[in-house]
Image (tube, rainbow, N blue to C red):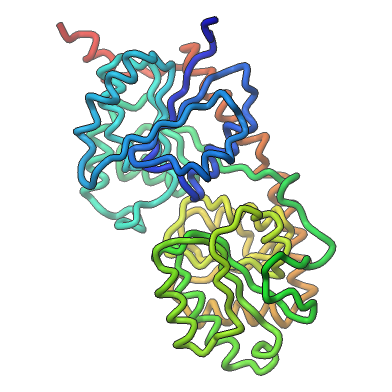
Length: 396
């Protein structure tokens, strides 16, 4: 029996642990199945362990095993895929997948959406003119842009030259039922910090340079060196896997933090992890709109975050948490000290953060916004005048 639901093909660089990928998982798991079919195409790989987080059985995963360098060699493969499957929508995300709109356009895919989720690793403030030019070159192939933050929306308008009418801002949403507060910090399986007399600062994220974990460890070291009470009662847990595990382990030893900092590795029980923290810290050097930060807020945690990317849009400084400058190790240490010594104020921040998530960053709102966009563009209600489509139709 033929499935008449329109097909959406999501094209990403990789489908593995990460904020962008978690957003896709949440979208697919909560969008009503009767409206669209979905396929995930990873230019590199779809990690088997991560794909299991998608609970729908009708989602197909394709890994293209792209070698390093430009993705032009994948154009024929993707052209044939798009031509044969006839998707209603191809939805690419971030600069690494943007050029894959070329085979989508050539194959006649009618709706081509491109999402910008955060800054590129080598362009943390969006100032790289080469990347701006690349985005401008491909802009004619994009039916609609999705910007995850006001800062990214402004970047697309001011630096890339995209008209405001072609951009839809859709913030990440969090499952506030899954990520919910507990009555006090809860013990966590395998944690060395379950003693209720401790106060645990925690961070969740892949161990890579852009996430700023080295800054966090150095700041925590300064904090506990200068504060005798913190040396006795403060602990730091960093949850996540990645290429910097050995380097961070060496840094912990170098700073004399054995027994005070725990590198927990990758875990699948993130809601339980959040409930084992007293304070959540996001020390990123660059960010888009952080799913993990929203999950921490939904879990009722006070948060400390760097003032990069979309973080200032999420954290109401002084009310739901604290913001520090990226790379300001003394400022980060001071923020940890402030929340360590004011536990009642920290709890109040956590309550305010959850209230903000429920009011402004619900999963239902995110899913509804994407569903509305998909249906609107497929139906052609507000499809833009797309010069790329016009030029393709004019070809002999």
